[in-house]
Length: 188
Ligand code: NI
Image (cartoon, rainbow, N blue to C red; front, side):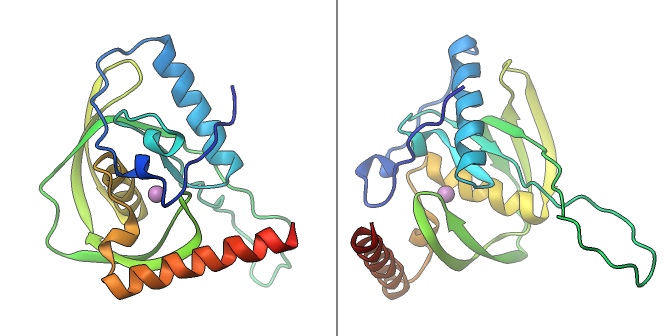
């Protein structure tokens, strides 16, 4: 497996409309493995293939939720909170009947590093997708996974979370990112 370079704004490749996957072969499995390794290394909870420069309709997501564990009431808890890995692959994903009620999350993106903004999206969706073997799946999805899946699916259409913001807000985010890059340049 290998860690792939993540492309960042304003790289024009991020505006590409990705192509459907038609071959469910070893090359696809290797790319998916590399995408997971790249996402965990970043670290992030979702990655679209175009973010590593591959214009194909492939997403990997792992919300890495903290392990639920019980403590005796009042017991001191000083250990690291572990997370459970829950890798999910979505190939050629589609959204059916998005709910009219919305959820707002403070979103970020590995291609817009260290910048966050509130984005509203349908709170619940029905999704259809294929796995690495080409098998079809359908499920009702809500909560954080619904938000994350919609954010990643936007990448397949060349859309970033900042494209959901007002022009003024988007400019502010890009300015902050530019300043951060300059500061890091000076520090390095
Ligand atoms: Ni993103």
